Length: 178
Image (cartoon, rainbow, N blue to C red; front, top):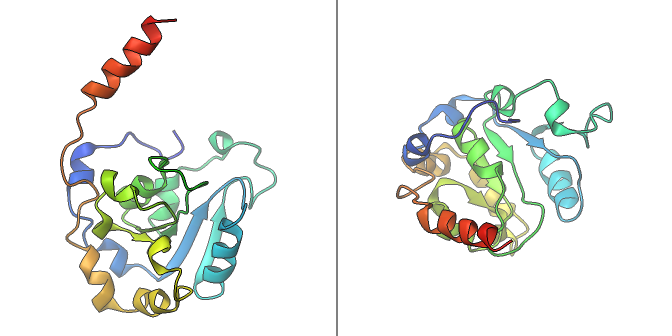
């Protein structure tokens, strides 16, 4: 609902394209809280790039994302990068953040555990976990380099079509045992 349209698996299987390269190198973020390490991540990147935050954390008049009066896709179309760190690091716990950014033609910059590579193509987004050893210094330079950013152009978020039949059977089994 907050994104503004349903996801299309076909679009997630298509390469990102170069739209994000044509935009100003600005960052946006959507959140209702800035618990650590999100707060430190935002502090660091907002000193390096023009940054704008959206959602209840940045606008105290909003008490819920669904009452925000905007769609994420309409805002992200104006940004090259979407800072989209996940709420917590748990294997298999990935929210809408990376697909939202990808479908909006923003380069997703997330913070997620390494298992995100199982569900999404790791060459289609930036995982900050991979850049913590040098305190993001190489990444900052890379985000300013067209040569570095061009490697994301021909990468899809999904490498193969997802089949949820086994997951649906599993949920049906649980529900039927209530």
